[in-house]
Image (cartoon, rainbow, N blue to C red; front, side, top):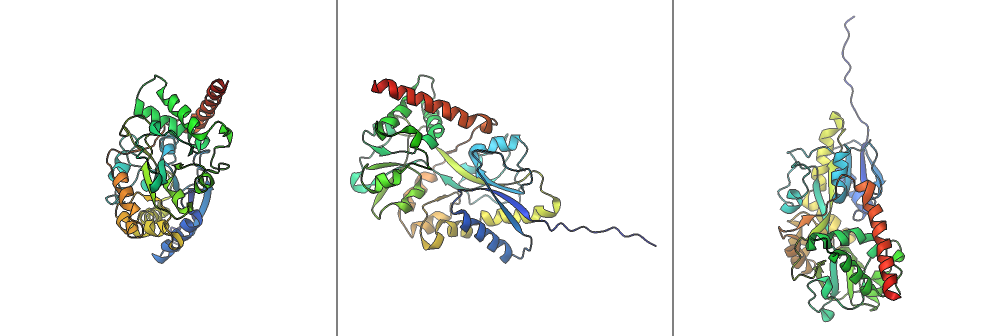
Length: 344
């Protein structure tokens, strides 16, 4: 009897590790699954929530969605596959591609960028060009964003003279002596309420918070963590999607199709207008901005700032998981001590 080789078809699900607070995650997962099915795919998608800031993902991931601050660490630890050249990136903000390479290789497609923004109502606008020129109460999620603020200031000042720490102490002053620094994280801080109720005229946070503000005419500038007129090195957090380093051959084409769907302008537009409402996110896809500007002209100025080719992607080194938040905790203790010394 003649033996025949068996053809094995891999019909296992594609496992997608995604940052649990990426856009509207329920909508993102549902929309991705819908588009995947509409394009003729039958493979199941398995979504796994993952806090990309706090822990490494599982080794079983086929696709990863994460903040680029962890990209170098994920590449170094062997999680990510180089982006195949078949994936088009010509509609992306070019700086998000150029400044997200690891050892000159591209490992992912940018989906959204995220800016630390200084926001106020137009009637309260004092034309603040840098945060050292702000001298009135402001809502600031300091504890969560502490290392980002510090490193952005350090990149601007480019020195070891302590000016970066002075920037953080200045932010503490803007928050007020009565504010407990331990309570200024995203989980417990009520900065949106403070701003909405007029307890402060300035808000430092992400553009996405605009959807939670009371209707008004707002001015948005990307925060300049220095005392210079212009930001010397503007940095943006950026959400990327990458293929896993151990994707089985049978799944690879489906994974590539998913990456193409995620980077499609119509897909991104639908995320940015969830339930018919602007989410005030900042897409990495250039062609989406004019469409969003038809719903709110504010997007014209947002695109002008986001399209600046001097912008950079906020990155950290290969030791991100080992030291980023440990250093943040140390820095918070230094601030608390400095604040205490000032009060007494």
